[in-house]
Length: 330
Image (cartoon, rainbow, N blue to C red; front, side, top):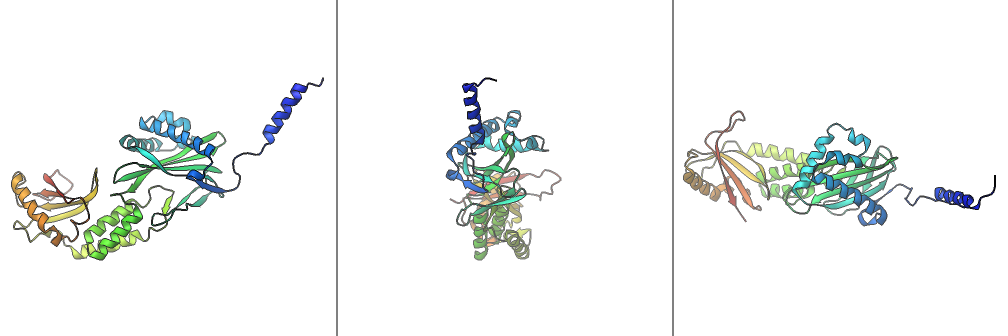
């Protein structure tokens, strides 16, 4: 075989290419936000752009091109995509935090995110592949925000979406730990109903993502149990508003979600026929003036209190007529 300098140079070049060390880090570690290498971050953001482009139109088939094989075959995958797609259609989302990780373990791994203050959190997740990327998105506007989590893994066939989920991040502009602190403050003031409603909201916001664990969440469930017991002992329903001449009876109080946030909804029985809306409204005006005496704190520190008047108590079996009213406080 004759010596061919061109072939020799080509073989030498290929040898150099295949023996060059990878530019990607090899040691376990995690990189957050701007600490992710620019080239990697740009690559991940292209994946995110494609994800949101297809979520915007709920194109599940097109999304499968960036999904892992396991995610494509996952039962309930379609429902996951639909739920996240509905959120993307309803609001404009922006990136909150992102992490590129090289996992130390194949099973559970943990990232100390370096966040400070009451909302500091840790990521605890399954190290599906050696390299992973996790991105967390929240709406740009709104008091009640849902977090979208997208997790990508590097497989032997490339970077692919391995999980997608959505869960509540804030209620009335507050995170789970912030709501917990607010509930404690309400309890200290003797605002039992507000404290109970707020700790329920805290529980709802406890895990904005399956991998996201707040460091200062405290014993939220214990506080809920304590408040529920205290409320049951303190209030006997139906609760008569004796300061109003018609003696309306409160039968239930709960959080009601509106486009502006969550506010207390007071359900009560009235002896006035609902068809007489003028008299019902007049009675409600009287209720609003004294509601703080029956339910201390219920009309403090919030935009609205919602009311729903009934002539007969709803039992969940048949439809019962009611008349809804809103008290604007701010």
